[in-house]
Length: 218
Image 1 (cartoon, one colour):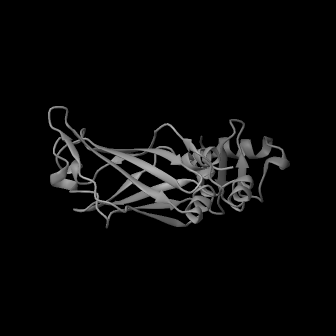
Image 2 (cartoon, one colour):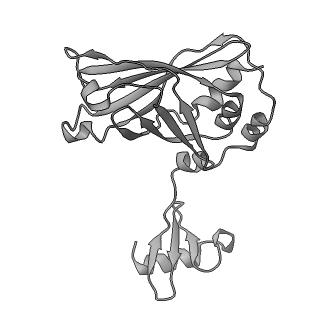
Image 3 (cartoon, one colour):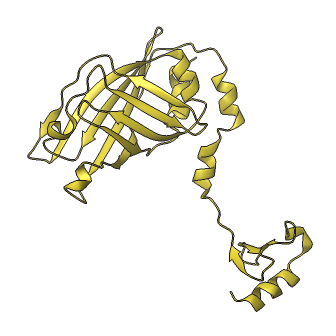
């Protein structure tokens, strides 16, 4: 779109479509910013999914304020974490993915989060070591909070060199305070503390806890 076209759009668009005098909407639905020096540019917009992640809807906050009462339940595993490993990427541009499936299991007294990590390397121990009592997940939330989930036991990996991957099956307990915070916002990023390194991974399923927690609580 040239400057003449921008001016024509400006003249043709109703005033109701204008925000001040420097922002207008084209017939195609895009927004254009006009500057005093005669230049212009398209307005940068955030993807809808990013806007959705930034702030949890009001009903989520209301749910988070309710008292937590567990019920007996066992949910199917879902992939929640899926991202590239900085370490594995140094050796392969294709076999460099780390993912983790979550499965919530609850009784009347507590909630357990089963984590099943899968690393696309047949000798994962040499890079990541174990999940130990010092291992933890730092879950960064859309509202700016960080939830630290601490493992309480040591878990050794199972390596499958013939298939090119390694798994870590581990579990940890979620407190009621953590449950309340996790259902009030979306997941944005996770920092995983392995025994041999710390890595950050992307979130594949940002609203996992928002949807899963109501299934294990009354």
